[in-house]
Each structure stands twice: as C-alpha cells, then as structure tokens.
Length: 356
Image (cartoon, rainbow, N blue to C red; front, side):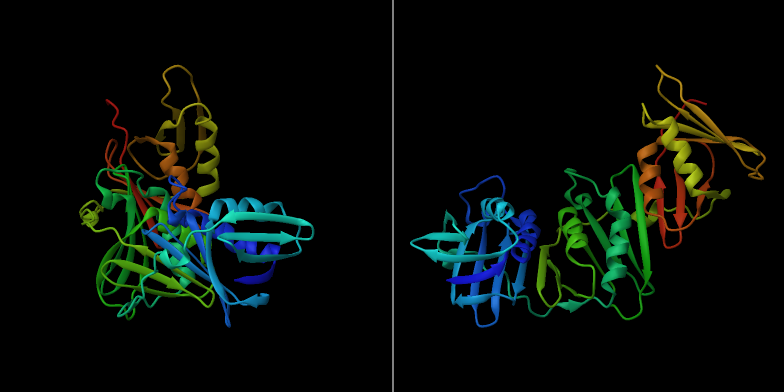
C-alpha cells in the first residue's frame, strides 16, 4: 500500500477518528485505524465495537492498492508535527512508513485482514428529518444526559417518534429536558442513543446526511463519512408522567438578565434561591458561609411571593441552549418541580427542598 496526501487533509480525518478508538488497551486492534487504498481513493475506518466511523478521501496521488492498520493515537502524534506539505505513506515489512522531505517514521502494523468489519447495514428505516434539525434538537438536551448511571438507559437520549411529533428526551433524574419537532412521515418508534454517540454526531455532521436506524443500530452517512452506533437496549422512564399538565404561574422573563444575575451570585457556590414577588426577583446563594445576593426590579403581576431553590447549573445549561431574548418560567408553588420553556424546547427541574 502506498499513497501521497496533503498533511492537513489527512490530519483532519485522523483527528476526528480518535474518539472511536480503544484507549485503555493499546495492544487491541481496535486501537488501530484501518487504511485501504484502491481505485476510488483512500478509505479509513475506526471502531471500538460500540461506535464506528468510515471516511473516504478521494484526493490522493501516486497510490498503490493495499491495506494496513496503525495505532491511531501514535499516527496522529506524528502527523501533527509535520509541515503542511505532502506526506508519503506506505507499508513495508509489517510497518507503516510515513515520510516527508528528509523525515521518516515507522509504526508497527497489525494484520489488516483481522480488523473488525463494520456491519453492512441492511433493511434500515430512514428517518425523514433534516440533519440540521436533528443536530440542533440533540444539542439542546445533551447537558441533561446522565453519566455512568447504573440505569444504563439514562446514559443516552431517547428519540420518541410519535404520530404528530418527534421528542428528543434526556434526564439525569434531577432534570428532564425535551426538544421536539413536527413529525410528518416517520413511523412511530422509540430508541435510545448513547451519550458518546450524541457528542460525536454533533462534531461530524453539519450539512445534509442520511439518518437510518433499526432495533439495534443508528447510522448517519453523507458522501464521505459513515457513522454508526449501537443503540442502548433498555426501557426509558415514562417521562411524560413528569410533565405538569397545568401551571398556576407562567412568567416571561428576560434571558440575559437572568444569566447575569445567576452568574453573579454563584461565583462561589452553585446552589441558589430565587424569590419572586410582585415587583422584583431576588437571587441569593444558599452557601451558609458566605453571602451573595442581587435583585432585579420587574413587574411580575403576581399576588403571592414564592421561591425556587435549585442548582444554578441546571438553569444555565437551559439558558445557554435557548434562542430567544425571553424565556418562560412556569411553576405551581415553592418546593415543587418547575418548568422552563423556549420555543420547541423545555426543561423540568427538580428543586432543592427548603424548609418553609
């Protein structure tokens, strides 16, 4: 195998493949990137069995057909240090040889025939949805996906396809985030996408791509890249049971002022109490050792004073994903879950219960 390629093009693809490699065991073949040259160009693959990626690069020159594997982390370490000029890459005596000008590097290869095959997915159902809408919807709920929860289905995002709408759902048990789109032609279905896959999808796809799925896999592909992930096999909690059917109060509040006030009082401690009355909103830290407090004057047109006590991170996560200058805050009374909404995105937050 041999080919010549521009350094920046090669580095960009190799860098995007790093999250798909086995990191804990450098002796595993899944710590390697698979490379194959043929008449259509260069194909690269990486997988840790749970997620995988296949990329194609057409603009190579002086190529000789063949295949190889090489440790992906070590390969990137070398490529990064080279100049932005052409690189010669070839296989020789069980080594991958990398040359540029008078510099030469050799990395050991494994038998490319033993590299795991990325499944030839057949009979997949297409998800009729624009890639941009898909990415924007999962991006909004990503902060609420849990990490390493024993209930492994919470370590992913639920895609709940209903007859009229598609809900993207995540919860870490302290909050529930839901983003939704209109469903026009998709059949009803439910599946859970792992958090790692959710994060990588947002990096890889910015333009049109084909999204397909079956009971165990999700595949997203465009002209040069094919991504796959195994889906989480589990039953997501009945999230609709948590959504309040009625709310006593619905306030429309300025986002920027909220962000500024929250950040001001949480510089030392993240738990805060927000008190609402007819003419103001008071923000204060719940830190017992220090005092942080600020107030904004605003006519809320409410009769009774009430408060929300909460980890400010949940509020800031929500506010960072909103598009409008004003957001809605809904609640029934103090010490109960409250509701945050911006267009087709809402979050329900469990409060910190304070003694009245």
